[in-house]
Image (cartoon, one colour):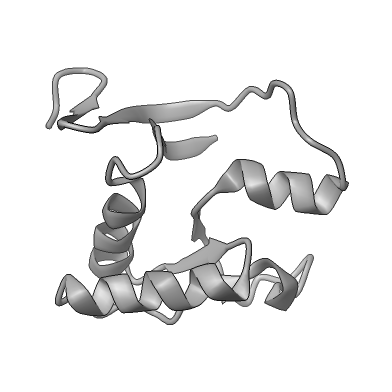
Length: 112
C-alpha cells in the first residue's frame, strides 16, 4: 500500500511536496523523462533542498532493490509509458491522501 498519495491539477505543488519528502527521507524520485529529471533537480536546488538525483523511467533496473522505496512523480504518465496505452481509470490504495489545489493543500484527516 502507498503511504502518501498526492493528487492535484497541474502547477499545484505536487512535485514540490515530493521534493520536500525526498530531502527529508533520502528517497529517490522517479520521473517519466530525462527532461523531467532535470526539471526536478533544478527545482530542488531552487528550493534550497538537497535530494538524491532523480531517476527517469528508462534508467530503472526492473526487479532490483537498488533504490529501495522510491517517490514517483507523474505516476499516470509512467504507467502509460510502460503499458503503451492511455489509462482511462485507475485505483490506488493510500494511507494518507493529499489533494493539491491552486490556492492550498489539504491532507485528508485535517493535517496541513
